Length: 346
Image (cartoon, rainbow, N blue to C red; front, side, top):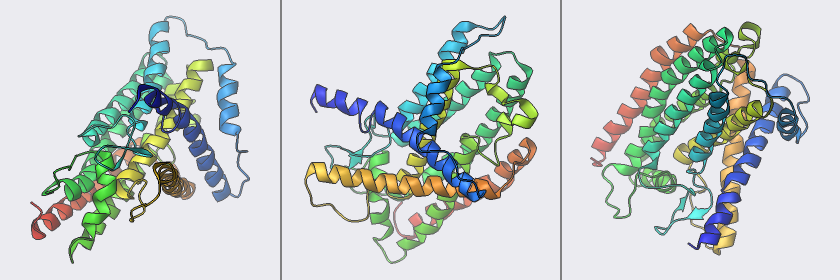
């Protein structure tokens, strides 16, 4: 690929400019569905953009005795981590092997995603810790505890499609990559008479991943780290101005990243189960449309869930993660492995 083409893709679709626009759109959709679930009208379409612009125009104050360096660097690291993960989501870029891949994808990127999630959680922890505010430190401790509890079952959930596609695969072009999994998951599910049973593990893992998405984004019922009534916005309490705007934008891009990850691993990504026979430009447009429709459905489902569930305490969150979500993730993983053994895939 020519250098100038790579630069254009990095800026537009599926690049940084696209991620910003998509993140703002996902935020609007989430707030709109959430509002309609509460019988409210919800924000206008451009409200997320207005919020970012308004925040950047406000003064950013550094508390006395707090490191200006870390309060400047950490928000930049926060958004950089979200962008890095999002650039791995396969949308329209076609690889030499013939499947859609992300701009920054590579073999084994499905495992690198775990590192991205852990880095995101650790950066969030330090964002609150460096402010030396007691509300922020309580909130950031809750956030780290919540993320660590949910990242483990999420990791097991990610292994379900990896096992189905990767283990026992005789394809010489096989990869442990997001793009390869999204293209081949449902081909393998329909290969043999009993292979449709893989759907059970996929559904369980997908539902767990949506709950993890809510916890990672600190949405109801998992918003105790930023509880306004208890912690005055938690780990965000000392941030303002452009720093606050960067953090909010990072959260919106992270919503795209997590939703896109669920779409890629469990819903076939940009594919619809049949081969497109058009030119590259038309195929790319259709891949983009298929992907965005699935992402909208995942986001709307998550938003609907948070309209019907009230906030739970941090101890209830930890209990839910360890006693219910983790065992379910293990069941889904073991069921998939057993089916692989029965179907001769291992």
